[in-house]
Structures are given as C-alpha cells and as structure tokens.
Length: 279
Image (tube, rainbow, N blue to C red):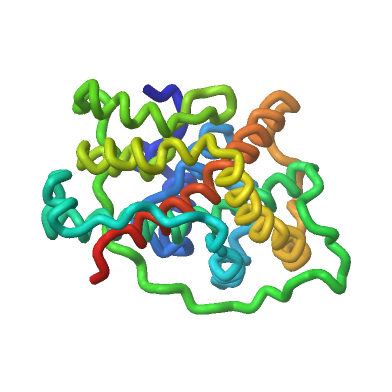
C-alpha cells in the first residue's frame, strides 16, 4: 500500500531521537509528523534543518502564525453524523473521543508543517512564497503553546486490514518523492473501517474536485506566505545542506507534496470534526 521511506519514531536514536522529542513538544502532539520522519532518511538533513528552524518553533511563534491563517470557509461541510449513525459505523463513545483527538492532532500539525516545509524550501534555495519586502514581514512573537493532545492510536498495518478497508484507504493515496503515500489521518482512522468507508464515499470525491483543490490551495498560500517572515527572524545555516543535487530535488518534491496534503489535512480534519455530534 505504501513504499514511503521514513525513520519511524520507534527506530530513532541519538540526535534524531532528541530532535523527535523536541518536535513532539513544539507541535504539542504526541507523535512526529511524517514530514520529519521522511527528512530523517537523508543523513544529516534533519539536524541541519532543525538547528536553523528550532528557535521559531521553540518560541511558539511560527505555530501560532500558521494556526491563525487557516480559513476553510470556502469548503462545503460534510454530511452531519448522529450518534446513531456513528454506532451503525461501529463507533462507540470511546471511539468517538479518539477520532476527535486524531482529527484535532492533524488540524494542529498540518498548518505548522506548511510553514516549516516552505521555510525549508527557502533554506534549500527555492524562493519562498511572498514578497519578502521588509514592510510585508510579520513579526514573530513568542507565544505559549497549548497543552499536548492525548496519544492517538498507531497507524493500522496493512496486514491487519480487510480488502474493503484497503480499498477505502486507496482512495486517499497520493505520491511523495516518487513513492506511494497515504496521509496518516486516514491510516489511523482505518481502526474504524466503517467510518473510513464513509469518508471514502463522502470525502474521497472531493480530493479530485478542482474547486475543492483550489480552496485548499488558498489555505496553503495564506500559510506559506509567512515563510519569509520566519526565515527573516532566524540565523542562516552555518553550512550548506548535507544533500546531493539529486537528493535536494527529492526533498523539494516531497515539500511540494506536503503543500498539497497539509492544507487538506487541516481542512478535511476540520470538516470531519464539524460533522461529528457536538460535545
């Protein structure tokens, strides 16, 4: 189902493990995003990038700028789900609470990934979005981070899925750096196969709707436009990126994928949350 390469959290050691710990703390979630797990496969890249970007994240400034820029008013809501409808999909009260936490996690992580990925692209020599003029830069103000969200379930291994679940999950597949990639939101929601099938039917068609994709692109542009402000507030790297030209292009290709999937995770995660019964 996926050939996506990464350094899993369970296999991280030494400096990578230490960086993973800081990422969990600065993102205020109990896991490390696939963006960083993928960067870690390139020797020396994650430490190089994190050394430069970490001040903006440790202060909370970059995260709050990104969260404040998310606006999904251009997207139609998903059909609302009642408690009975959820029960018919195999979701009890504990499952509903878990699904809410999962969606909140991706809504929290994805905007920050957008600004981090855009800033990383700038560090790798790709001109970031925005003019970068002094009078257009947004000041970075240290801001307290929210409390970390509770742990979420692990992604369901493919071997544990039924053919129906695998087919539903395939609806959400995309490509990352030339490899098949399924966003983690759906891989975790596969714990509730009936709910995943429901999302494949109601949300899946939107992944290929030009109007929806344009709206998500607008979400991305609002956040990515902050990248020059983040870069202007940071010290430049002390050395070039430890990448070959070929690997640089692979990383930039991965960043382009996150430009597509991250606004979708923030947007669709919010739509899923709003479709659930109110607490």
